[in-house]
Structures are given as structure tokens and as C-alpha cells.
Amino acid sequence: MKRVWIETYGCQMNVADTELILGVLAGEGYTQADQPEGADVLLVNTCAVRDNAEQRVIGRMGELQRHKRPGTVLGVVGCMAQRLGPILLERVPKVDLVVGPDGYRNLPELLGHAAGGMRTADVEYRSWEHYEDFPQVRAAGPTAFVTVQRGCDYRCTFCIVPTTRGPERSRRLADVVAEVRALAEGGTSEVTLLGQTVNSYHDGTDDFAALLRAMGTVDGIRRIRFTSPYPTDFTPSVIEAMATTPAVCDHVHLPVQSGSNSVLRRMRRRYTRERYLDVVDEIRSAMPAITFSTDIIVGFPGETEDEFADTLSIVGAAGFDDAYTFKYSVREGTPAVKIRDHVPDDVATERLDRLIDVVRAQARRRNAAHVGEVYEVLVERPARRGDMMLARTRRNHMVLVDLPTSSIGEYHKVQLTGTTGSTFTGALHHARLAVL
Ligand code: SAH
Ligand code: F3S
Image 1: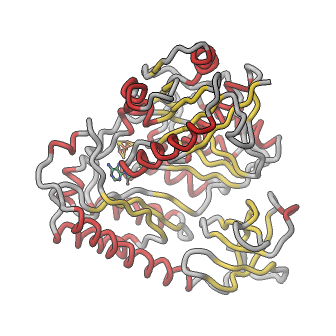
Image 2 (image 1 turned 180 degrees about the vertical axis):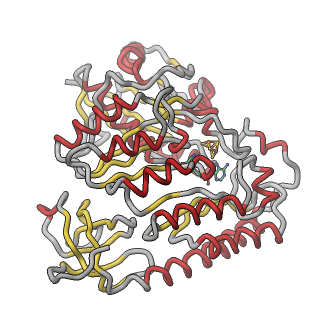
Image 3 (image 1 turned 60 degrees about the horizontal axis):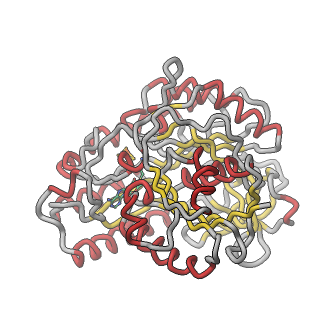
């Protein structure tokens, strides 16, 4: 029995890809190691979206190398593997194998070569690849990530993802339904559909609206989430499908990136501030309970103080409940590299701090307003500290509840009793109050 240790960095799609890699390797008799020591294969599934993500991986690889004995294979997979390819083999002498997101079906063969001393990089794009024939090895739990679309055909000028993940392609609706049906039969009741522009999903026959509706018919699936949609791909029919499919949750993560029209244009985002806000309004009118989170980049090349002010003001204008905020990171090979006037790091840092203050204050205010309300939550996992369980509302609020570990996967009604600003505490609720 060969044992593989795999670490995952970056987005949810990498989490799903790690489950896929474990599935590919399980077919060849590999089992998952619970520590790097003594494993036959060490893999790092990497992110390339910002430089600090790559620096973390490089640091971690330095540590992992220490577990390498003769015969152990050290491999780098994922977006950083795709971006750097053979350069990684040159720069990190102990790395035996570099495989991009379209090369995972070859892993068993490449691992064999690597064990024999051959160092390879497989960074070919395979735009047909969906890994349909590999059952994923998923961590047990009530919720599952389901990749419905790989790659990206948009060309946001800051973003390396189109280079690391190749062209956009959607899985066939019937294949997705079959997978979700099997998940539901195994006890999963919540799925998160994944794609870089997930609502541009189209398999040649069916679009994202059809996919949502089809998900809604799967017995046992009580919650449907998806990430990340692109603002202008929320067609009226997608919004209608969301609003009329009861399992679709009341939360959308909708990356805005900037609140300034001139910055959005330089980023080559396909919307204006006004159009973005219209989309938010359209979704809110169809689903009044919806909450929004977003991604925001500060310090994009040429960003002026006025442009940044527009980003600060869109937080309130859109009514975001949460935001992931990033300092722009130059990615070699992206179009934005050529834009002049790079924002000095101290200016970008200072803007990031101001933005985080605005986002936090708004999140705290909005969350405080929910204290006292009663929600249905799905119990997901033990909280990191204490002996409480972490549960989630349909609106994506995280709630600490005093329940036993055996409650994982159960749905309970809880009354929110307090908030730290980002998460809530809740108490089990039995009375007949309206449930949100
Ligand atoms: N379409 C994907 C985007 C993947 S990248 C999605 O929406 O999930 C995730 C986020 O990282 C982006 O929304 C963006 O806010 C941020 N990001 C991407 N490239 C970046 C860069 N060069 N510098 C800083 N942040 C970046
Ligand atoms: Fe990146 Fe824009 Fe695609 S952020 S993943 S190029 S939609």
C-alpha cells in the first residue's frame, strides 16, 4: 500500500481538485497518509493568484523536503505548478514532479517515473478534461464541493487564472446531476457548485438556470450554493431560477474588485459600478433575504485616491455583508503588468487598512441587527476552540451552537444570541417563531 500526503492551498476549487487527485490515486492503490513523515508521495496543491500565496508554498516546500527519504516523491500540483512548470524543477532541486490542473489523470504514471528518478513537468492544457471517470475521495461531511466548470475565458487584466487553469469548459448537466444524486444518497444535503465564472455555465444545451433547477430536483439536497458568479452573467432567467428553487441559499459571493469605473475598465471587468449595483438590486428584489459578500482589490495600477474613494463607497452602496480584501499583486504574464503607475506599497497598505475598517464596521452593524432572529442552521463541524459546533444559516452566517459532535449534518432552529462582529452565538430554539 502506497501512502500519499497532500496539502491544499488557495480556493475551494483546489480543495475539490485535491479530492479528485486522491480519487485518481485511490484507483492505483494509494491511501491518504495522516502525516508527511513516512509517506511515499508528498504533494502540494498550490495557488498562484497572489505572490504571497506562492511565497507560502515555497516556504512550506522547504519544510516538506525534510521528510524526503530515498524513494519519496515530492510533487507540486495546481496553479503555481502550471504557472512555473519546468522552472520549478530548476529552482527547487528536490521537486520531482510538476503537474498543472489539466494533468491529474497522468499522476499515477508520472509518480512511477518520478520514483525511478525521472523529473517531469506536465503543464499541457487539455480543454476536454473533466475527470468524469474518477470518483472523488471526499472528506466525510454534510456539505460537498462540486466542480461544474473548469478554466476561465474572461481576461481580467490582473488575473493569472486563465493562464493556470486554461480555457473554460462546462461539465454535462446530466453528469453533474448524477454526481449530486450520489452525494445525496450518501448523506450530503448541501452542495456548492464551483466554477471561475460559474453562472456562465453552459454545456452546449443547458445553462446555469437549468443547472440550478436540476439541482433543486435532487432528493435530499436541501441547500445549493455556488461560487463565484460573474456579475453580468446573472441573466433574468438565472435570477428567476435562484428565486424559484427553494434549495438555493440566500447568499451570493459576487466579486466586484473595484467601485471605480475607470479602474474596472483598466481591469477589463465587463461592467460598470452602476451595472454591478443594478445586478445586486435585481437579485435583492427577487430574493429579499439575500446577503452579499465580495472580493475587492486595492492598489491596482494607476489607482488614484478618488478612484479608491469609489471603492470605499461601493461597500455601503451594495450593502455587502462581508468582503475579502486584497492588495494588488503583480502577476507576470498578465496584461496589467504593462499598465504604468504602479501604486507604492505603503499607499496600497494604507488603503487596504481603511477598506478593512469600512468592511468590518458595516459587517458588525449588519450582523448586530440579526441578533434575536431565529434561523435554520446546518451543523457543519466542531469549532476550533471550545466544544461548540459551527453551524451555518442559509444567509451564510456562521453560528456557534452548543451541540454534540453527533449533530454534524443535522438541521436545527437556533436563535442568534450575540455576535463577535463576524460570527454569531446561537441557542437551540423550539418555540414557534418565524424561521429565516
Ligand atoms: N473567478 C474567480 C477569481 C479567482 S481569483 C472567482 O471569482 O472565484 C480570486 C480573487 O483573488 C479575485 O476575485 C480577486 O479579487 C483576487 N485576485 C486575483 N488576482 C489578483 C491579483 N493579481 N492581486 C490581488 N488579488 C487578486
Ligand atoms: Fe480571473 Fe476574471 Fe476569470 S478574476 S478567474 S480572469 S473572471
